[in-house]
Each structure stands twice: as structure tokens, then as C-alpha cells.
Length: 112
Image 1 (cartoon, rainbow, N blue to C red):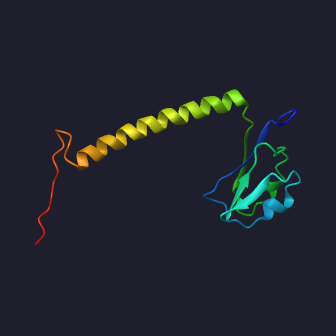
Image 2: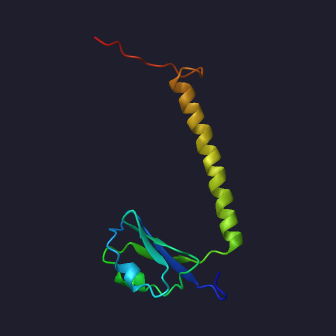
Image 3: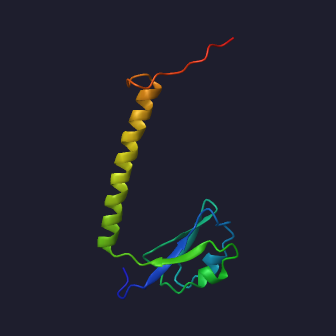
């Protein structure tokens, strides 16, 4: 972990990343690797200098606030709650599809 964490660290927007690898070459901290054709930033190693962002031809790298352990724990908790909510919704949808939930009749077409 950083002794004095940076104010912000690099984040790759994967929908924009072309996997060119320029960022991995300019990162003096060795914080960026390319995996499956996309850049991945190590928050542990990133110093927040943003050389990667200034060299990225697709503008895929942005600066995000550095997160402390409590910030990360809160984010994990938020994501778990969202997964539980989505799982409940998925169960309801599956039940409707199988005709197991009243009030949601299945509409089936007859094959000709």
C-alpha cells in the first residue's frame, strides 16, 4: 500500500480501451498490464501521475479518487446488496417464465 496515497489513480474505461499497450509502456510504476486485449490498472502500484491517460489515443483512462479500505468495504457492501436485489428479481422472472407465479399468465403460440 502507498505510504502517502495519491489523490487519484488511473482507471481504464474498458468500453473505450483498444488494447494498444501504449499505457503499459509509459507507466513508470509498472501499474498497468494488458489482459485479454484490455489495460488493467493495479491500484496498489498506481502513483496517480496520469502519464498513461495523457498518452492513451482512445481516451480510455481517467483519474478516479483513491479509495481507502473503508471506502472499498462500503462499495463491496453496496454491490452485495445490489446483487441480492438483482438475484431476487431474476428469481421472480424465472418463476413467471415457468408459470409458477400467479398473475402473470404465459402467452404461448401454437406452432403451425
